[in-house]
Image (cartoon, rainbow, N blue to C red; front, side, top):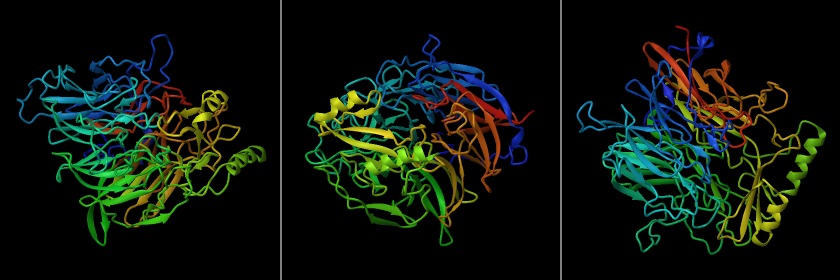
Length: 612
């Protein structure tokens, strides 16, 4: 399964590769899927290869940004079959062309070896759910219509191709395929519905749907789903024993203004929600941000682990957030295991906006990133002064400073803290391993009458319409004249937290700037990062994630980097490992960060192993 097991531990019991021999890892094979090319020698800058493959019955399965599904020999990387859904790449895909993983289902009622008795299930950027025979790659014709289900049918009012897409792997529980969606958040108030649905894994029939509007909220008369609700774009996790699915939710659309006269749809926004897998019924929900106006939606797969408390082992959900907080919740009730307090936050948002008076903060574990930006930073007096000038001209009163017309500093920014790579949990130590980011962003609300002039004066800037509100939104990372963040490095870190104490055991910079600067200087400043970590029983942490053409292994006890290798581009998928034919492999999708990737883009899936 994506994340290694139903609970997303990102932990492997394998130990052939150890602290002592990891330095001997060498490239075993590289598979190039070919879908990043436009066919004329150029690369698709709007594609991101962020895959974590899965291994099933001796075959490695994955998907490309164009949603081609492939099956490989895990020992050689040789291609066994591919399936092409014929995705239209011309759409305005709000979240780039991304496919982070596929799912597997074994039909318990099918005869062994029968067609589609084993299935690979994939969801596409153009919102289709497809079931394939795991042995051949052929469509399972009894699933939906000729092997496909439309995720748009009767539910989505899409203005353009790519406004509604699926980027994460489907989730499976007891023969139900559960799928969320990624939506263009800041285009309009009446964005496509963020409904989460469960489909029959054999027939493709709809089993249930969870509309994320508040309880009792009026539904459309035609039976469709409420528009503009929170969505679920990140991976989900499941507890088969309890029959529960754990869902990380986004916020309603748009992200930065939902004031007077707009629908009140954030009851389930920026939350962790437990659903009954058989029915989609809400069992409990816990909100990590109240009335989220910072795009602090829950971005990461909830991780299910047992944590120590008063000498007992308690079933928990560990939720990483963009704020750098880890919320540790009881798996059966959603109650915070270590306690949460409501803290007062800055008030006085844009005209018409209402700000929650408090926001929840876990008593432990301690935050993974600094929670306050004390001052601007720079290499020299000149660039530090430029950053300080921007800082002083913007509103900043701490983490939850409201978006404003003069411009507000967002720290941490909307990228995190943690993002979709989530965390890994070492169950033998009760330690959490997380990669995090730490740099500021600027957000400004632009009155509608000024939007055209601001666009003309800022060509190429991110300016979202937020149609249906009084304001457009302008957003950018807060950078110095040298193009580096205005906060003190490290800008990306690898962190290990002890769940028993809630304390950080160690924290080290993740990545160097060698691929970010004109001169290849290996300064360990830490870089922004995407993707997650992998932990093995031998005490190794494998990770790419940094915006650098390098993959690494760290000693989980000390944080020492004990192996690295150069790869074709930054490895922004989460690595995975397996043993096949007596040899342990570690696999990285080294495809780059997509749009604007400083390390470029690639189509390489690279496997490492010890010499034979």
